[in-house]
Image (cartoon, rainbow, N blue to C red; front, side, top):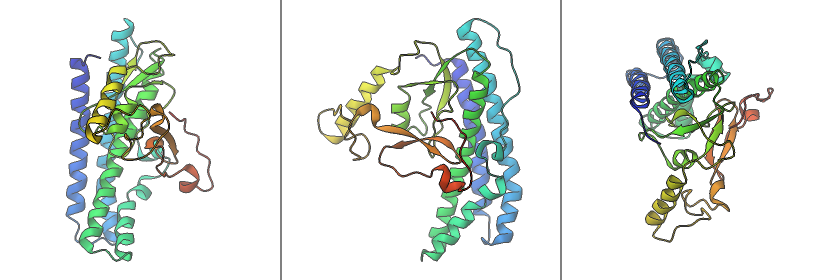
Amino acid sequence: MAVTRLDQNYDAQVAAVRSKVMSYAYRKWSSLSAYRDADAEQLIAELVPRVEAGQKRVAELTDAYLSRVAAQQLGTAILRGAVADATTESLRGVDANTVYQRPFTTVYTSLSNGNTLTAATAAGAARLADLVSSGMQLAKTHSARQAMSRTGVELYQRILTGRENCALCVIASTQRYYKGDLMPIHPGCDCGIKSFIGAPDEQVIDPKLLEQTHEAVAAKSGRAADRGGRDIGLNNPVADYLDVIVTHEHGELGPVLAWRSDHFTGPSQIWPTKTSTRTGG
């Protein structure tokens, strides 16, 4: 699939928003002199408005981009509508204060396990980065689902950006998805989304990339390409290559890509008294 100037511009704009917010979060975390309740309150008060402004901007960029792509593909004007609500609570079902308290909880837990303050704060920083990153990606996927519901395009595909794409992303990008489903994500994911014009029964839309993935794994492992997929998942044995990845329903993030043998946080583990209503991928 050829990458257009429109694709490139959208990707660059979203990446710039993401980078700016991530950098701000890192600076605020690094400037903390302590990690007590007062420090948490201060960081949350300063960071959350920046994060949610970034999420809103990503949602707006995604809506505009997908509307233009659909108009080009279908040869007709697309009626624009309201952009998806990109607040933290709307995207995750959990209020922002609770979400951004978690890096501090990570610090406390690490210290209680006997780790040094340096190690504990590094773990907290990593947790914060994951939260900010996943918030930006959720803004993209939620906005995309709402935008595509207005376009008349039934299918979409995952677009690799080349920045954060791991084997999970690459394999998933060879498949097509239905517009009613949120695009599955994973920690650090920054994949793009684009409407797909093709046969609904065409599950594998990029067989060449799928074959190249086989070959890359074979080259790295030093063995012949394994169509059973036993070498693709960092030594995770699987029975079927197309079953290398699965979509778990995460109680807060929605559909999440994972290796079949990975553990994950389900709805009951996050909201013990609630039932998740999100649609899987």
